[in-house]
Length: 126
Image (cartoon, rainbow, N blue to C red; front, side, top):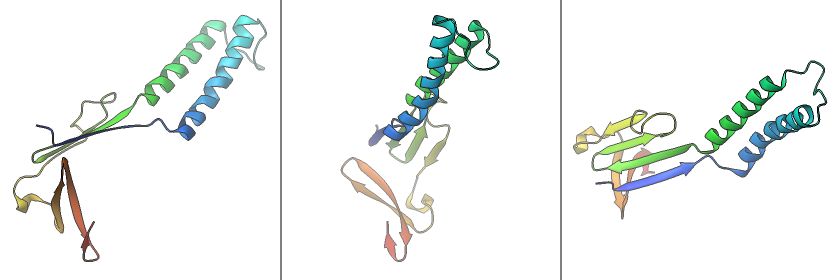
């Protein structure tokens, strides 16, 4: 029984713009060399190698933008993982058993479907 599940993506506007820059430059060079027939750069690669490089770059960007961080809280267990990298649970699978199993200076707080692990900091749990 999942008490809480959250999925976070890496799709941020600044990150998309940062990744789109090299893709646009490579696609422009690809168009210029393959379609228009003008060599791109001082030492152009073959059209087949250019297609391979452009395809690998585009596949990497699509893969990276589809990454998701999945966090699931079960009774007494916390599971965190990136499904496109490795199965969830291989990063962190922390079993919270009895109250004595909690980290020092911490406690659990349940708010609706959310289970929070709070740490004691400056006399307050945060």
